[in-house]
Image 1: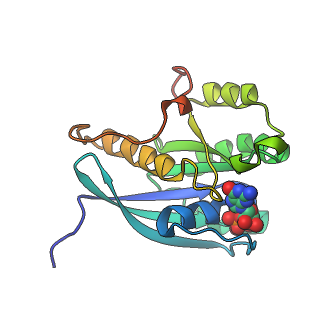
Image 2: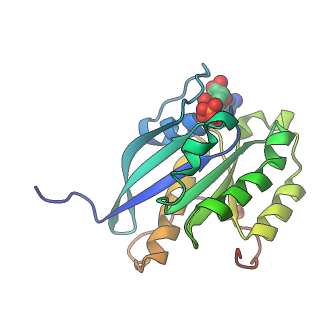
Image 3: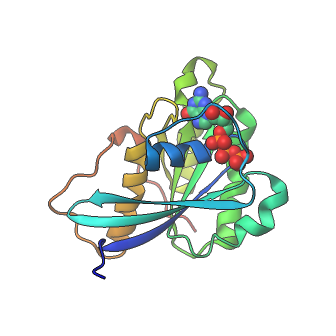
Amino acid sequence: MAKTYDHLFKLLLIGDSGMGKTCLIICFAEDGFNNTYISTIGIDFKICTVDVGRKKIKLQVWDTAGQERFKTITTAYYRGAMGIILVYDITDEKSFENIQNWMKSIKENASAGVEHLLLENKCDMEAKRNVQKEQVIKLAWEHGIRFFETSAKSSTNVDEAFSSLAWDILLKSGGQRSGGQRSGNSHSHPPPAPALT
Ligand SMILES: Nc1nc2c(ncn2[C@@H]2O[C@H](COP(=O)(O)OP(=O)(O)OP(=O)(O)O)[C@@H](O)[C@H]2O)c(=O)[nH]1
């Protein structure tokens, strides 16, 4: 049977429990949202296809459990990921502080040169924001990581974030950026930053 896509990219979402990782994937892959919180057990995945430029990209998106007790299982999946999305909740300062630990975990477990992206999720709750924008910009600068404000609830920037990461992986793998536009807003780009060591 003929292949219906040009590239297969494997993505992984990580972050503390309850940040909205599962909801972001459901929003992206199925255009849905559920207020009920059912914590992920171990690991799960969804498949969807996006058009990036003139290429059809099949995304295999792995959803990890944020709970510490699943760490051994979930870190085993880092190595095969081509892109890693870190998620924190803008209303939860601790979840932002923990991003440093998640970054460390990427360095220890993922392949060198893996693409990554930070999502400031639950931006529909801006009034309850507990993490200052300056802190996010500083962290993004230090780690050379781009970030998007997202909301799985209001679908804000979710497609843009996933497509942006797919673009980055495509460009890294030698794809040409022609005949298409990366969707999304450019304010998510921090100033030029040193490469992740
Ligand atoms: N207001 C708001 N709530 C959200 C958003 N995304 C997720 N939630 C809620 O946050 C809770 C946790 O969402 P999940 O997607 O299950 O979180 P998770 O990060 O996958 O959690 P674990 O599976 O335990 O790691 C649920 O009650 C969701 O409805 C968002 O963008 N805005």
